[in-house]
Length: 106
Image (cartoon, rainbow, N blue to C red; front, side):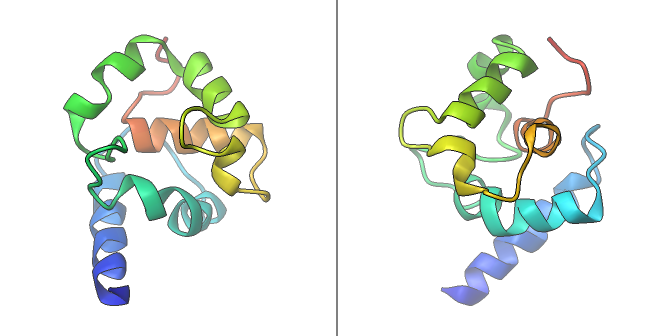
């Protein structure tokens, strides 16, 4: 199982190079230990990074609404995705990364 998680994270890291988000090394680490745990695995109940159809409706709400949802928690997602090390700027970059948004997309 650990190998599968590492493989999924590696695939997500390759995807990072194809999106407009510009994560720092620190934010990539935050992604790896927080966001990737749920948004890379392909659980049908969780929107998956890189699966555009999972994000169409969510992204229509815009970046600010997504950031607010992450910060406060929504549905089964806990506030800040349990990322106690993330500030709002980190969350904003990570939301762009996971949801496939371009910077400033509203």
